[in-house]
Length: 94
Image 1 (cartoon, rainbow, N blue to C red):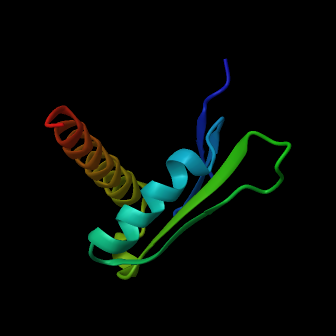
Image 2 (image 1 turned 45 degrees about the vertical axis):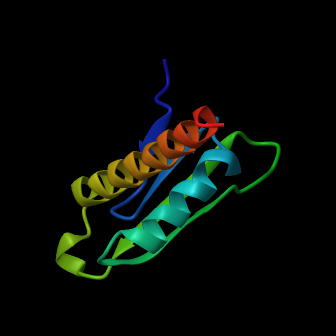
């Protein structure tokens, strides 16, 4: 069994079977709402491959390790969940 997420270095990791649908909102919330992040982005090296490379770079070099990056991504996913919950609440009020 292969792992869906693989650590490439202190900044980047690969994700299998994900595309712009999840990664673009994640990049957006990390860029706009999480402090101390200098760069956040992703690339899909080739459209026929089901692989994306996600990169998060901290402003503070001392914080550039995978545990900080993992926490940042968890915070970003939590924010996406909050946006989804808010949308569901708005829809249910109609």
